[in-house]
Length: 280
Ligand SMILES: N[C@@H](CCC(=O)N[C@@H](CS)C(=O)NCC(=O)O)C(=O)O
Figure (cartoon, rainbow, N blue to C red):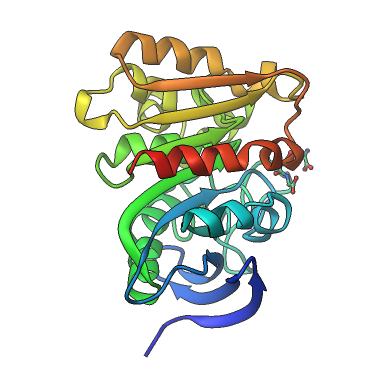
């Protein structure tokens, strides 16, 4: 029997947008995710799947409702899975700020209290959710990963930490060097502890600088130049310099006038989907 409970189902561009809930072992509680299945996804013709990791304060809904990704996903035949951004509910710890705790899981497995019991988003994304998606839906083992801001950090880091799992990676406005910016320092101190040596293995720029050829994965990063978080939190220049040092295949595209919002994502999501599709 399936572990999944269907929460909603909507027809979209000839395919389906659905939300499911299930009891996650990694997160030690119920979690919800959304999936877009293009019309071409059938048991006989499974499709590749893109994992989308959202940013701070988001749930599975922001991307599906605001990015306008279904039309291109339907055309290209790509399924999209959007998990929540953290464990939820009374059982899981929380903080009185938008950038820590629920809605701010940072796609890592926390080692510190009071977070360690539920905040295991890395294991959740790379193992548990992947397995349940591949068992439950008509998808192939071809995986792409993408995300926004905290989720852009997640996409880059999970791809670098799990070589071979994803065929290509992309990010919008990612937190490129979390060990050096307030969002990252706050989250890593809470989730990983004060020992800063342990943080580098969750930092995209640090991982990319030290990357070996087997970790190299075609990567597209899009950044708006009117992004209100660019100077203080995002630091794409750190990622570019890391890629230059290790010969990592990074393309950074900078877009005049675009900010940090989903208007930016909606403007370029089709380009990202075509980028992933072209790497197959
Ligand atoms: N201070 C902002 C920061 C959060 C923020 O900008 N979140 C981005 C990701 S880092 C987002 O996607 N927000 C949800 C949305 O636009 O739908 C807020 O809480 O609104």
